[in-house]
Image 1: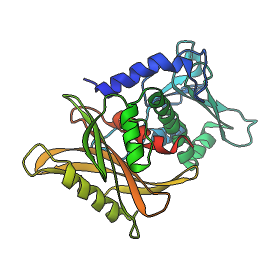
Image 2 (image 1 turned 45 degrees about the vertical axis):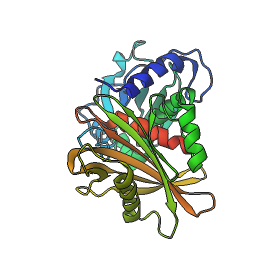
Image 3 (image 1 turned 30 degrees about the horizontal axis):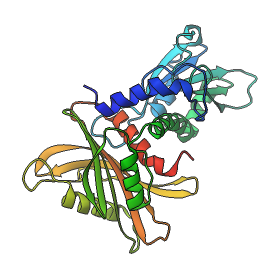
Image 4 (image 1 turned 90 degrees about the vertical axis):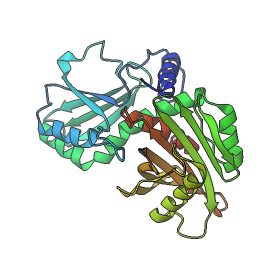
Amino acid sequence: MKSLFYLSTCFLFLLSACRSGSNGRSTLLPNITGKPGQILVVAPVQIKDTPLADSLRAVLGAEYPMIPQHEPAFDLTFIPESAFDRVLQPFRNILFIRTSPDSAQSSLRLATDKWAAPQSVAYLSGPNIDSLAAWVGTHAYTLYQTFTEAEQKRLMEGYRKVHNADLSSLVAKRFGVWMDIPSGFATRVDKPDFCWLSLETKDISQGIFVYEWGNFGSPFAPDTLVAHQNYYTHRDVPGPSPNSYMQVAEVIPPEVQALRFGGDTLVRMRGLWDVRGHAMGGAFVSYSHLSADGLRVITTVGYIYAPRFKKREYMRQLEAVLLGQVGED
């Protein structure tokens, strides 16, 4: 059974995507088709058993980071161009492969909303299959981010249109961070230095923490980020059993990376969580940044508990909420 969060997101896009394109402007194009995270790869001939297909799988089909089960970042479907018809034209993410001996070098060209909205279309062109495979290996990040950002923008646009204004305002007033908190979330803990919001169903739990602490030097060291997250979850996020509480799992060290979003720098931490004293766990992602005066560190965390379900799209949903604080740059 899908979560209320996931169902409401899909319903939201059925209502709104046909009116808003990838740039947020109104459009009369039909709504996109396909499921989140799917990419249709269209080539002049079938390429699924070629070095190029292997390179695409290695980049776009690589394991989604830091979730407690194996899931690819994207689900790829390879078809020859002869099979690409009007039924497939509205697909959400399309990667066209073009080869021509007249091409001097390989390149990637991007387009949006060609047949539907909000649609992402990419054209990978080069002299031959081998040169395209080499380009994919060299420009892996660019290709990966092309479709990652497309999925994020769709979610962010949907949350802008329909969100819990009261909870978004609460977080903004308390911590100076605006996020479009999806409808269905409710307050679990509300303290001056810590806020816990979550959406609960009988099958899954999606949650968001927002907290802050004083900047006393080296605030973004991995051990510091983990220590502060553990402090707040120990204090305010109890587990189901007596004396149990959430914590950052120690089995695999979290991944920490500094990222630029326009003029903002955020430090992202991806990892796994578990409950001390009880057998349960899941995945989380956090973003931390300094306050405008540099005296405080503000952290937003999104976590998922879905023991019987895949977690990739739940994490994408949460990350899109957290990234709403810096927009789409």
